[in-house]
Length: 526
Image 1 (cartoon, rainbow, N blue to C red):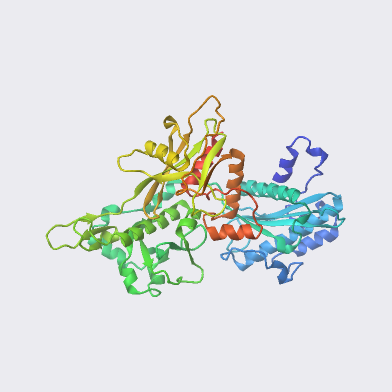
Image 2: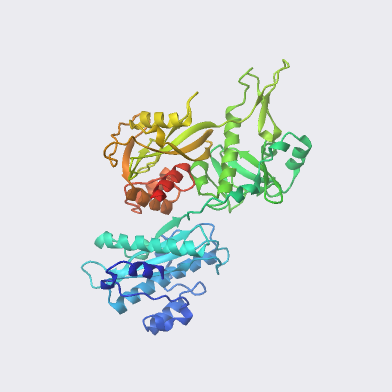
């Protein structure tokens, strides 16, 4: 319905657009399906209860399912893949059009397959390949959402359909035409941050020094854990949630010494359940078959705001504990107290020095030209190919944030910003190893030509490249990043490029990191 409405809203569409059919219930919509009884029977036969019309497993080997999806859900998605293929081919033949697109899926908020929590859509485009009279499937895509919101998912799937149509029209005769050409798209919804979610996590700083309460918390069988492996990975349940393992479920999996050194993070939920960080060595196994370890830096931004905060908090403590084992006043070994959130020196001279974790302030800034038509983005050596982001750097001793913005931008790119244009946007903990990022927008000095782009002269010790990007190109990059997922993960990006799954020219960071927030707010500003 949204696809049809979008097409009809374009002036002149009546010269190319024939129309569309919404077959909301396959069982009851036979007469809508081109009056084709045979097609109706074939589509009714495509269901999770029946084998797919194309039941050859070789034809499905390139289709990627989220490992957390139930078998029933996977079968349901397969049925929609077959359904959309059959419908697109039939409509293209019946109407004798150059192209036909079919969509099928589930938008929410409730779902029929067991274990399904978010929406998906399957899109299929049928048409004539150039120089051929045969009608075939030119492209097919499975789009996974992370939301069960019906309205948001409908918009999302309509946008994905538009993207796929454009790709088909631009691809020419070499576009893939078989089942093995099915592509997969994982998309995050642009959810507003819900401040009430943080109320579920109480850091409980006022009771950390109460030894009786803490002793009880450490012995609670229902105490939950953010499990950290090494200092770089946390235990996930799904791409959106951590596996907050209860003590009673994991105490037999790992050595007692690991539980003795747990760090108290606070209390969780209305029941105020104690929450700890459990630190494991780099070779530790997962406690069960359903959970998995993933890189905190690249994957934590995909988590919900609450679970992202928990992952970063646990990571901050392990990094602090590993690098601060001796007193920087007297050099004595440190011992952890207050549930691992503080340390004190063990010297015998009667002097006691206490130490707490710290965060180093760093600025990150999106610089635009005076008319805000272009943004300055840069690549560092650690970034994957094609990934550009906002400029960032540490705040020096005695320096305020605004001065740090101007200095860092000039040192790294040679571009001078207008000090009066620097505006605070937001902040984010970034414990890699112990930063707190403070985000800003800023503009270059205006001249007679407000569209002028300042010359760039990068510091090669800091950056690989820096460029001015048009707003439309940055917007498309955000769409590509949302499709890709963890674009900060070099291996994932390189594999997608090598497989031909992306042929663009720019990536920007994923949602969930401050650099992306700066970019999104700029895109939304006008």
